[in-house]
Image (spheres, each protein chain N blue to C red):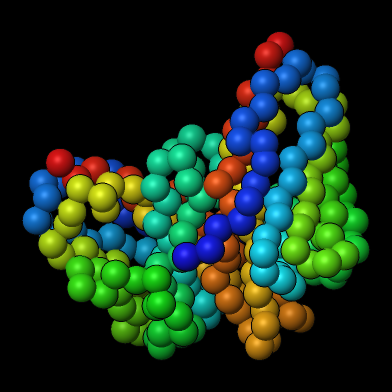
Amino acid sequence: GQQLNQSPQSMFIQEGEDVSMNCTSSSIFNTWLWYKQDPGEGPVLLIALYKAGELTSNGRLTAQFGITRKDSFLNISASIPSDVGIYFCAGEPNSGGGADGLTFGKGTHLIIQP
Amino acid sequence: EAGVAQSPRYKIIEKRQSVAFWCNPISGHATLYWYQQILGQGPKLLIQFQNNGVVDDSQLPKDRFSAERLKGVDSTLKIQPAKLEDSAVYLCASSSYRDAKNIQYFGAGTRLSVL
């Protein structure tokens, strides 16, 4: 099955730095989502994007839905220790209306040095 | 509001044995999903239910995996017989489609080790 191309695979940053990660696909998705997964837990939704070009913020997090509907990025400003974890992008086709399963990227592992 | 419940949290079996996982979705959520997450990868959809009917099972290895949601609420995923490559976390998610939006909420998963 298809997986989204997510980069970078891992990031080592200092506390207080800004973070940027992105996701690309060869297929169009009508919904893009960003999840965070902590060890031993399931993914938790951070931001959902529903329209091409949409820019949405959630606290220190900002995400954008690419105009081509084949990409998305997530920015985290002023990182703090609790931002540590694995971030996944996910796309939902919604091609025929109704609910669809998600296609996930391989994840970006964020490590923060105090 | 209670989240998606899964059990057991951990399971260790030998290859060729059988195993079953259970999921209780968020109350009122019509759609239920099972995902497989291999170490170092993102989750991969195995099967999607709408109420008690299967919507998508195109990525389910049907020779050994089966799933059911008989009453449209709880669901079980079974592997028989298990192979070494089935070692993974099995995540259950549920959603309620409203206003053209479908937010999936995930359980904590069952970590399966096949020896």
